[in-house]
Amino acid sequence: MECDFPTLPLDCLVCIFSYLDAEDLITVSLVNQSWNGAAETAWLWRQMCMHRWTFCNLSKLNPEMQTWKNYYLRRAKLEQHMTSGRASADYTCKTLRGHTGTVVGLVYLSDSNHQFDSKSIVCSASSDGTIRAWSIQEGIQLWSSQVQDAPLTKIIADQQTGLVISTDSQGRIKAWKAQTGDELASFPTASSACTLLTYYRKHQSFLTAGTSGGALHTLTIPALSQVSHVRAFDTYKIDILLLSPDKHWVIAALRESLDLHPKVYFTESLSCPCEDDPPVSASIPVNGCTVASFFPSEAARVMIVHSDGLSNAKNISIFDIKSKKSKYKTEIMVEQVGSFELLFDGWNSDILLEAHGSGTILIAQGKELKLYSIAGTQIASFQDHKEHIAAMCVDSFRVVTASYDLSLRVFTWKKEQNKDLSLESRYHLLGGSHMFSRGFTHVACDYASIVASVAAKDGKDVLKAYSFNA
Figure 1 (cartoon, one colour):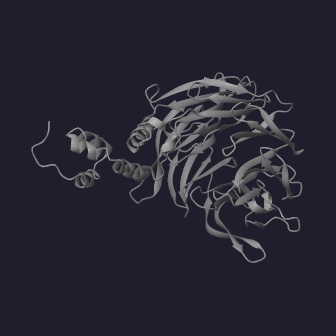
Figure 2: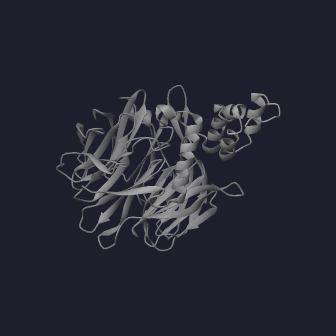
Figure 3: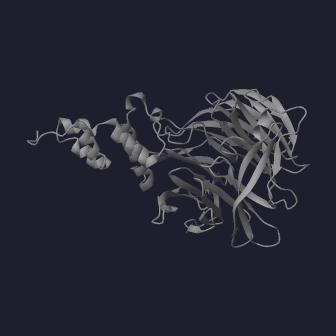
C-alpha cells in the first residue's frame, strides 16, 4: 500500500538508506515504489560491498548476475556457509580417487581470491608419475597425464598462461596445458630436487627454479627456454624460493645453514640478464634459516625464522627490501624493521609460516597455531589439533590447517576491540578413518572450496574436496 506522507526526493532516501544493513535495505524496498527504487540503487550496494570486503570484482559472477546487490548477497551467503560449516547444509564433501602413489602437491588453476561463482579446478601431482585435474564441485577427474619416467616431486600453476609446471626426482621441469593435460615443453636441470616459482613482467611469463646444486635457472614460459643460469650457492641445495608481492625480488635460501645467508635477487636481472654484469643481488643478514614468507599487503616485506644453532630458541626477523637506482647501477637495500624471539617446546624444526596483511604473522609448530603481531606480541594461540599440523592455507577470509589427526580446522579473521586482527576457531572437517589413512598432508583453498590430500596406508593417496554453497 502507498503511504499518505509526501515522498522524499530520491537523494534523501538514498542518504537515509545508507545507514541500513543489507537485511533492512531489502525490507524497506517492499514499502512502495519510490522506496524500492532508492533501495535498489547500485551506489548503496557498492558502498556496502567495498566497506565489507575492500576489493570486489563483478566479473567473478555470471553475466546475468553482475550487479552490486547480487554480488553482495551471494558473497555474504557464501561466507555465512563457510563460517558455520554444517555438513550437507553448508557444504558437500567428495572423495577424489585415481592416484596410485603419494600426492606431492596440489594447486588451483584459477585465481583463488573471490572466485565464487564458477567451477573450481585443481591439479594434483603424485609419486606415481602422473598429474591429474579435478572438477571440485562435480567431484570428477577431468584428465590425467601420461605416466612419467620418474616420480613427480612438485607442482605449481602459472595463472597468466593457464599452465601447470611440474618437476620430478631427476630434475626435469615440464609445462602442461591446464585445460587438456597436453605436455608443451621440457627442460632438464640434472638436479635431484627443484624449487619453483613463476612471475610475469614485460608481457612475458618466467619460471625460476632452484636446484639441489645451488643454481638458479630462469626460463621462459611456455617454451621453457633458458634465459639465465646463476650459481647462488656452491653445491648446496636451495630449499626456499620466494617471490615478493610486487614481483621485483626473488629470495633463495638454504634451510638450517649456519654459514650462508639467504640471498635476494632483482627479477629483472634474472629474466633479462646483462652479459657483462652479474645479476643484482644482496645478502639478508641471518643464519640458520628455517622458513620464510612475504607479507601479502606489502611490496616486499619478508619475515624469516632462523636460529643460531646453539639453543632451542628461534628468532623471527622482518626485513623490507627496496632498490636504490643510480645512473649506472641498481643496488638492493635490505632494512630490518622488526625482530623477536620464538619459544617452542621440543626440538621439532617443522615450522609452517604464513602472513596476513602487512603485519600479522601465523606460525604452526607441532599441534599449535600461534598468531603474532609484527612487534612480537602474541595475539592468539590454538591447540585444536590432536596431532601435528602438516599444512596451512591462508586467505583474506579464513585460515585452514591440516593435521595428521585427519581433520581440517577452519578459522575466520576477526577484529579485536584494540583493532588487532585475530582469529576465531569455527569448526573442523573430517578426512576419513585412521584404519585406512595416516592423516592430511597438503591443503589448498579458493573462495568457495577447500581441497586436501589424505595419505593412505596402502600408498594410494586420495583428495578430499569440500565445496561450499553460494
